[in-house]
Image (cartoon, rainbow, N blue to C red; front, top):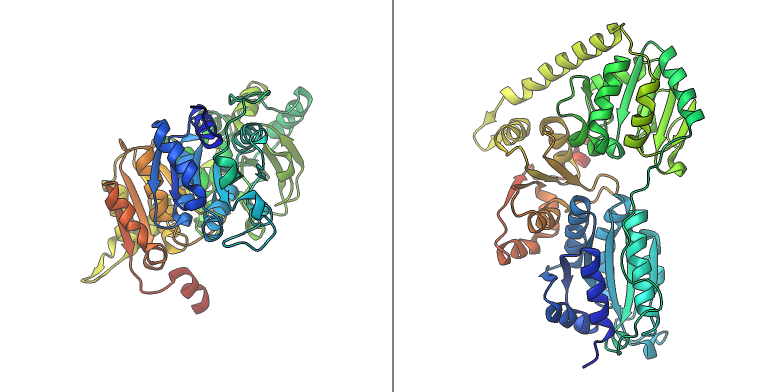
Length: 473
């Protein structure tokens, strides 16, 4: 018996390394669902809301580099959108299968009809609908390649009648290519950068998630330049640990020490960060930015120099060009200030609160102390981000996942589902707000169904805490 299009697409997902599909099934999705069952190499994860499935896929994709979710026509598509926005804005590769009504009913206001091209246009890099068996494998291969290499969402519209068609072998490539090119500035640009760094006495390094694979190079750079190192929330887990030059975060969630070091420096080197809060960026000193995506250069600050490159590749080429500095007065002063900031922060930890009114700082610090060195944390948007940013420390093995760019509520619990399924060998701890948890509460049943050993810590302040705080201020 010839395989159908749905079975062909499942084989391609297996080739791409997809292990699970997070979905709520529906009649337009039945052929794909059945193809997953027949193949046996991908597990169908039944979530209670497609939004939760998309959040779970986003978490798995951030940890492992690829994930898949699916929704059936109409409401299933709409439920996917918020989680896909989060994945796309977090730049993680997620394949979304959006099954649709039969092609013969397109444009007739058929039951549950939605225009997937319009619907998903703003939260995807690739977004197309296959209408023939010949198109399907070529388009799906493009969708997967796009998600992996552009680091974002690809939406593949799969009409139910196309899914059941006999598969047609593609005349183009069906395998998935995972390239890791070396990307760094030119020799001339690196020489000019080295000259600037060698000249300036007070240099500060600020790292985002784009620098997390360059931990050792960042520490070596800081050692040579006698430079304090700050980091964003997404960059924290990869940069903070084993880093004697750390001065913490800046911004709303950060500490005064990170802000102070950035503004007191003569030159700030931004590495792999798209930190959005321009009001926290300095305006009087020189700023140099290195990012693998050139469209990000200069959109948050006025730059003296903007360079395109992978942070690790760029620093490996830069380090031999630098002279080791001996004057460490600036570095020492910033580190001393950071120690005072941390001491002041402990005041809230030592005040444990009273019965039924435990201080959240004490809770977060206790979790940090007791959690395993390789724990995966997820945090809800809002005050849970504050507790995670200030009290959960990196170890080199820990991960911290959240809706850091999209800023959605209700992300922590479903992200914990994706993390726990992808990494059953690691403890998963979700720091949930009472508002966030209640928003997608139905997927507690998913945790129970799959017997996931997730720790859900609910910060019950009986309010949408950060919004309440902003209104009170």
